[in-house]
Image (tube, rainbow, N blue to C red; front, side, top):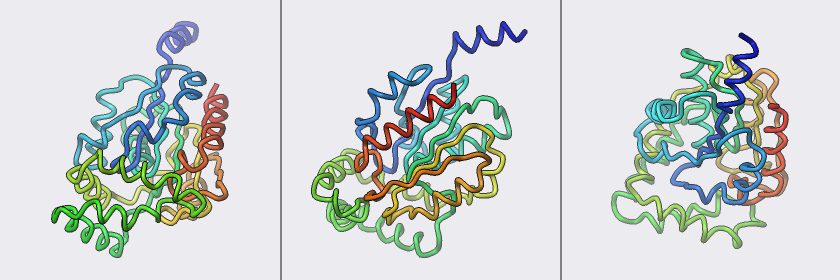
Length: 249
């Protein structure tokens, strides 16, 4: 039986699913993809479940339905929230399917009333057709000052590609999400947690509490880095993810 299971695992290695953040697409992972494709034990895919469902539980259910078998999940921001929701759902159904977890610049907490109010006001701006002005007013908060001029226009372009409807839908999904902190202790797969030391959107305290709640999780905080870790510190993030994959073997 053990030999048969080993042959089945070798024939069907876990796929690595990369989960983008809010209104982000595969460009978020552009610097990491070549190295991850070389290092991963199986296929590497960038998911778009966040663009096709209206809530985190629905996004997770869609992802699990479309990607059977064993999974490795790496998620940024909203993608990290989605990865933790997938872990929650699998914990009740088939925890052995989740082989590894990497959570970048994310939070397990529910939105505070203050954040809900800010998102609600932003949605009103998007619905009024003032989306680009809103993005330009807020985009700089996503970056460490050292990286703003270099990256902000690409960031705004990615948000505009998603469009206002996606931004509205995904903000509403984040506003409605549950507090996932009580579920973290049940995660048993090797977990890497990465945060930016100067992240203004998901401060490093959020990364610390996730890493402290998940048994055996590794925490790495990157200096001179804000919320957009994969763009701001691409080589460091790539190295951490490649080491995480190597550790899984």
